Length: 224
Image (tube, rainbow, N blue to C red; front, top):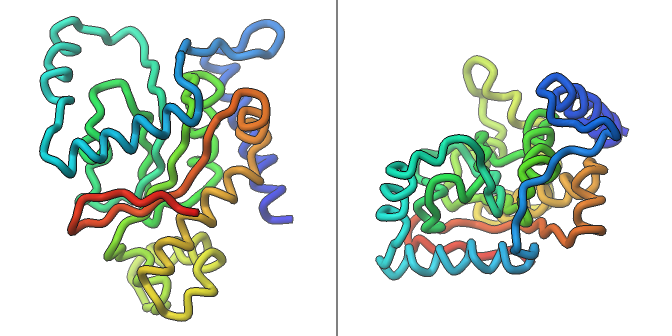
């Protein structure tokens, strides 16, 4: 019931936002960016960039300068979206060796799904035309560690727990396992709670996956 309500509320907000922004056509169909990549190819490109990052052969910075020089500021056509933790040690574009405009990055502590995050990812798929979505956890995640320990925290930080605990209940205190489980859970939650994403998976081959970034090695390991 909670997932269904969250998904319905997200869809209402999303459609209303599209209408307000003027991006929904008369027939209710959003204008899509053009991309030749399939969902599988988009995910492969993400992982190929991670291999370049690990090998110290980053190519994106010269491309960044080229893009800035050409002043391509009128539109964006990212091929993939990444939901990552807000942790400062996870610079998403760098670890996937991607340049300006290539990735639609969403960040929140614990890389968790909320109505706002789901709406953002729906926008990425329905309007920007992204072909792959990666929910990315990372080693030594403070949000997951705190949720596992159920620590008392100040302010509104404990609000995070309600989104994290359902996905890590089976980890039994194992933080690395909880990180992996949470990423997989959040990816599945996105597939189940968003009709926009579900339709894109079925009709357009959009790929939704989970993974974990290792702070020590720099490597991203995709989930099962």
